[in-house]
Length: 236
Image 1 (cartoon, rainbow, N blue to C red):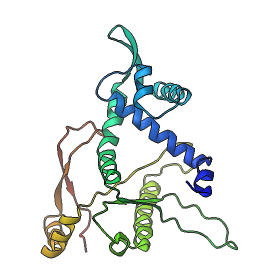
Image 2 (image 1 turned 90 degrees about the vertical axis):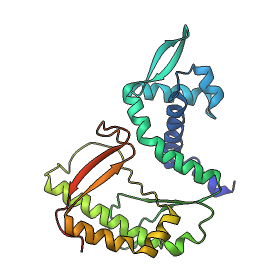
Image 3 (image 1 turned 180 degrees about the vertical axis):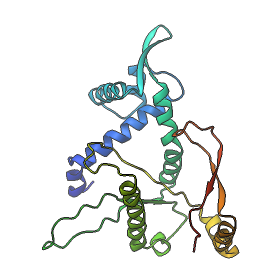
């Protein structure tokens, strides 16, 4: 670990990310069955104090509860916790597999403002992970595209917030994660078959389509859920 990496470990952002990662690890450990404090301490690379503090936080937010399991005190996921766990597990599985295979990871793509200009808020950052077998990922997904993609998403969100009359003075806090998993083999196949062009023609003709969800804990849907959508305008 170099000097800059050591410094980064003491920044608020690093500490926040480490805390979130450890909280996810606790949720995963409790997903199969309740666990005692000592069991969690052995399973996870977390100190006694950190584990205690994180369990208190998870209990306060209603994701974890303390119960009696096999005549001993233990921690278990609540219904709210199980819904939260369903939201993260599919993405975690994919990223964990990429990490195990020594894949690449990139975070950022945040624009900077010249010093003489007034500060501007940029609300998002891009996360890009790819398997080691996919070489030169930056040739396929240029960094400037990551910026354009964020711009389009932020523009759409801003438009919807203003259209719905949502207060800009809200004190709500939180994050939105929008992840797109791309199968490289299927990507090449779709280019060869010109599938996207055919999809657009189909959508423009039908003006409605079905979306398949493998998991849908946000709206309480079944593990495999199909919903119908109508297009507001043609996809030119």
